[in-house]
Amino acid sequence: MTWTTAASAAVLAAFLSSLVEAVEALTIVLSVATVRGWKPAGLGALAGVATLALIVLVLGPFLDRVPLHALQLAIGVLLLLFGMRWLRKAILRAAGIIPRHDEAAVFAAKTAVLRAHTRRLDWLAGLASYKAMLLEGLEVVFVVIAVGAGRGLLVPASIGALAACALVAAVGVAIHRPLARVPENTLKFTVGVMLSAFGIFWTGEGLGVVWPGEDLAILGFAALLLVTALATVRLARRPAIAS
Amino acid sequence: MKILLELFVDDGTLAAAIVAVVALSAIVAHFVPGITAGIVLLAGTLLALFGSI
Image (cartoon, rainbow over all chains, first blue to last red; front, side, top):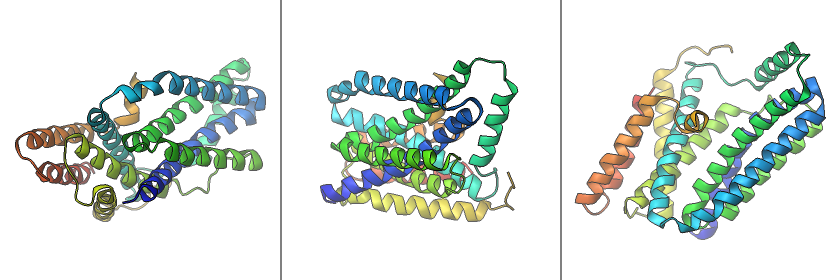
């Protein structure tokens, strides 16, 4: 696999996973803005982004000091845990065992909770926005580091993540509603497969395994994971749960 | 800390299975050179996923 192809895979994995996280963060920020106005929602979100930037600036330089094999192994195992968690949940949703994630329902629930606390100060609403941005953002930062750090692909992975966040923010500001039509489970299914494939690859590299085809092996892992996941959905399928 | 942990662990059995597969692969990689550890890792991961549903 050439650098360009590896970089494209990193961009795509970071873009798709960041898209899911950004949609989830946007839903909460919009629910805060709807009930309390844009000031606490915007300030909370900006504070969350600032905290994230601080975490990256403080911890980022340490990445260069970790031996490559140890970094690949640690990131590989974390990616496996992270990606398989997403994939398992996507399988359970696709099979109708647990309800699908509904951004419109999350939005309604969040706004109801905020409206129920009418006497609370705006900073509590801002805190909800801050927490959403920080937690979802941490997942984005992790994915960028995980798919980018092992082979010097941090820049393409960051570009993918930033593009997804910018796209979701632009659409959210334009329509002022949660992005309910995003096929979130399909995205999570795809991202779960991609991140787990990267996880198997990095873990193996960290253990000293020389994969046949080098980076190209990631595509083979993704194909095997996809086939296994689809077969599992088929075997476990139940009638869909409404919500 | 709990929130950070929840980023990676949802189903404890799946997480434990993944850690066990990685540990087994590490042991195999130590004693058997070549691709064997990679095969154990790949097959174990797929089995862990299938078994977690």
